[in-house]
Length: 295
Figure (cartoon, rainbow, N blue to C red):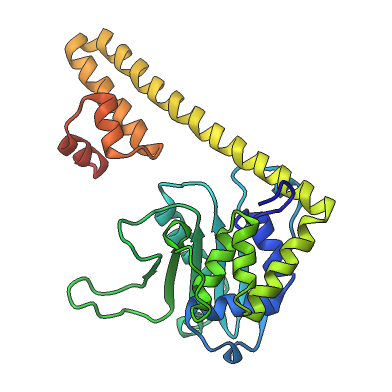
């Protein structure tokens, strides 16, 4: 993209684009969830505000929380890689599902809750860009309830060629667009909601206030990555130091082993992969796996 063109996959821009244009949000939800758009009658975004401290703050979520025709839906644009994102989205789904049940109400009053996660990196070991999770019996695949749905859309698995007959993919291509050429390609599909979104993105790119919002948000996200990197290094160092302290008390050999395990435990907590932990500590893959599962 040109120097001043903003990207829809920046979470704050994503939120501005769709919270201020409910017709586009309706079309996005219809496409991603496979719903007829004319069946969506009412959308109420409950957290459309974007606070200044939220733009600049680290570890701040820019999700969209809404009620759509009696369903509770949370849409989140995740730009940076979060290895614990699966646990995080299950936690947020549980809060969404249980949050509106009033004291004394019957559990049947609980509304269906849907989490939509659009992520700018590869997360699952599959070729499909869409993963849909529900609560099912493990062997029979019998659904326990139809009130739980968690969706992941991985932008890195989206094709580059525009197909005007696949509106969901067009939306994800627009969100993932990095160049003017990509936006022009999408505009040329003549799909009205996509054309409107491209036009709005261009208008937003000419707005100096929105440019500043985007700049501050990108800085905050870069600071967040740096903070996580520092925490990872500090956690590894703490594991080594802990091993040295235990080595003094219990003898070097035993203490060294406890230090390695402490380092590996910190690395697991900080989201490092099994392969990286093996390289870092010298433990075997099975030892790391056992440690990860608390054995």
